[in-house]
Image (cartoon, rainbow, N blue to C red; front, side):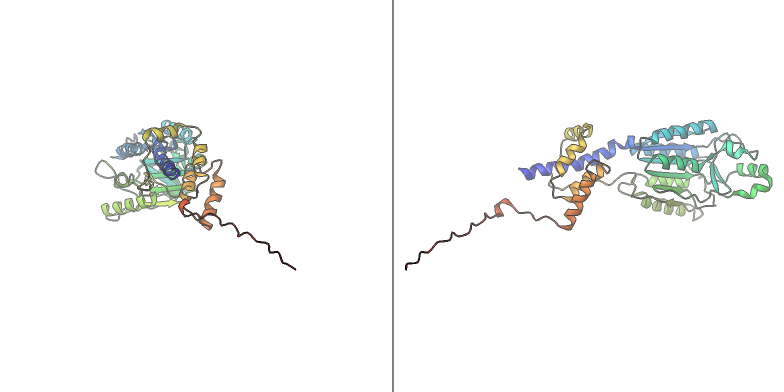
Length: 352
């Protein structure tokens, strides 16, 4: 009977972990998606807006809370970033996706709102958004940050800015500059540094099309996804465009996590049980009570996965270390033998 109950507990724990990965993701994973196509002072981009719309829909479908905005003037773009920052305060993962014009000046990257003119030397600071400002905001507020930037299009506004800057125009580079990531951050670019990307002739750019194709691959971490994206874009552009990334992630990141493995003979808990567990504020105590006397490393790992900073996380880590050093010896009740008492000693009387 105890064995059967243990199997139920294990099944509930792992089913709960899978359940909460999907349910809690909307609250813990937040994305800001911006696409600027309708530029007022230069030729519009064909598909930056539709790229953003399609990426936003894909992220919603896999459990992200998405802030979506398109064709933003500078004040509206600032407001969207502010709303994103406020949402990040309660999240564990932040995603930023931008499609539109961008440029690099003196090694720094700038994203260009739809109303930018860039006809004066000071316009750069007041009409654009520094990309590193967004990155620093994300890194200050969340543990894991992914920035995906399809902003390397050939930008006519760069020529306007170059004329306004005069002799300082040499500071303006081609495409975007290499921007390194902090710990826990990955930055993915639609093409390599100092190069321009293609806008595309269909609904999506080659880069956005590839991201949409692979981003929801179940059980594939982001590094594997970006390799698939790179190969797809290189094939489609005949190697003219090579997506590139800089990563300082400290753990694997999944848009769609792999399914936890549950023993095939373990009973499946009812949805009602899992729902009650997910709503109970005393969940950590209940899970710890279920695993604390266990001899199973996966059960302690399940607790740590759900509560990495939990009250009993230190004890769980110690129990795992102890079990790895000296695996327990399991004795079935029917194999146990009662202790044999020592034979009684008999005293001998000697006759004299």
